[in-house]
Image 1 (spheres, rainbow, N blue to C red):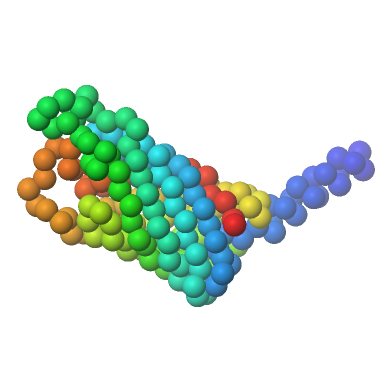
Image 2 (tube, rainbow, N blue to C red; image 1 turned 120 degrees about the vertical axis):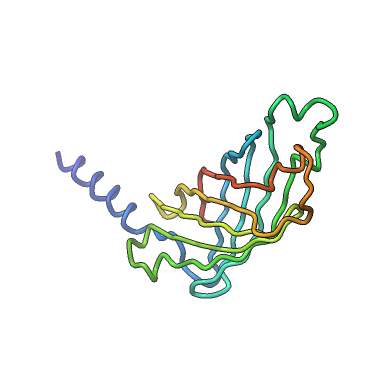
Length: 167
């Protein structure tokens, strides 16, 4: 019985000792799924804390599966249509909201190959090194208003969900 109590206590301590955003010098790597109209893919992102509530980073997405209509001419989606990379700025406000040290909410802006946009993300860490995240992304200004069907990929509302890691 003593061993069970000790294991539960250690496990509970590891949950309470995690922190979603620590400020300057904090590094977060995230890998997850990307969902959007006519496609699904993989999303990778990295954020680095440059201040108490500010981080900079990048995000890249590649669509592994797209709607069949986009694989045929005249729409055929090429590599450039399936791929996007963005530089990003986050305002990490989890500590301002004081919900939990394990939780971070981060609205932000991004500029990428397809558009200038914004995102709203949230992370929750279960342990010091592992958590989950979700992000909602939307374009504010598209580089071209007359988009083909294939060019609408990454130029629309998208959702990312996956795992987050402290580095």
